Image (cartoon, rainbow over all chains, first blue to last red; front, side, top):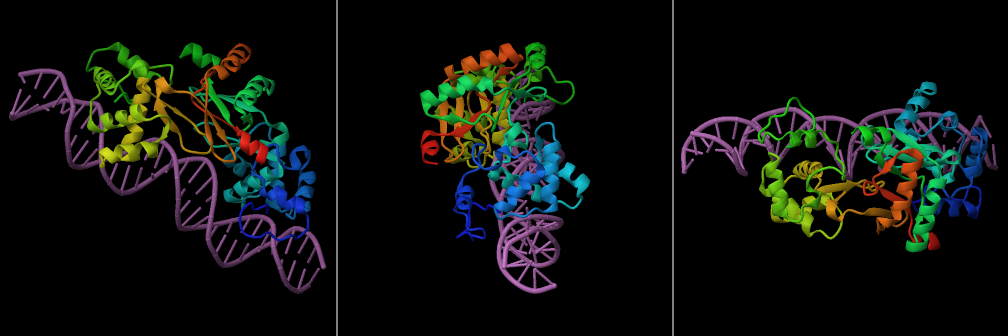
Length: 176
Length: 176
DNA sequence: GATCTTATTGCGATCCGGTCGCAACTGCGC
DNA sequence: GCGCAGTTGCGACCGGATCGCAATAAGATC
């Protein structure tokens, strides 16, 4: 579903919109699903795009909607497998990528560690302590100035949810 | 050399400073070598710390001092092997880690890709375009405000050279 | 310069996060 | 309920990075 590569796509639903959607890079700004607010709503969107509402996709979405923060692929797999034991982690990766292409999910690169996924509606920046590994959520306002300056001076548009900022938390800075 | 783990270290040179140095986490702010300005100077520092001036270490340092930007471990290995073919990439990783502990080298996590290494004296922030992969150098002044705000509001000390900021470059933002 | 201690190296195995190829399965449109 | 094509489980695989180990060699000491 939503494969961005490959040869000529088939137009099951005849929507040109679909191909535009498909050819876009993964990006939190893209996708029609960034406002979706329930599992069923997302699944409706999936089907409208020619995808299918499979059990593993439903459970993954349930886990994502219930999560109170970002989760790694392995954590997602573990949570999904608690309800649907046969779901393979490669299925998690594939679904999470599909959902990201729809704009429902975003991922962030967390320094040395594995990527973290979460619903686009709840996305936020991250600070990670290099010393103790603690993760802090970064309010979006913090980035506004930097993003504006960088845009103006370098023409570069920062995507503040897509990477973690590394450094030292207060305790480690003072104690270490 | 400079192993941070393991049992009681041996005091070849009797310097308590050495153990303090050894027990510190890798960090660009730490280390006595951040001001070192030549291969020989660094090797002198290495020996003062109980390390040895080996050929592979010398060649790696030559490559680092000649580089005009950051390099991945693989690029470093390739460059080193052009002069010393038998140097294994694991030796590159180990040496680069040792040099980082000394404060001579820093590394940055570059989003999805491999880490990038360079001399601490030349370190800078990075912007990476998610679409085309272009890497831009970020002037340190750009981070000053953000770093100050984050420090004041969250107590978190940003290490702006240790991670790349992802987003979209001007061309991709306008064209994509 | 011979000796000895131990830091360092090369090598291959291994780890880890993530991706891929493929045959089997199954939503769901007809 | 048929059949197409989207999806899945599985295992192989990939790239980046780390590790264990026996062999090597800096360099301090004599």
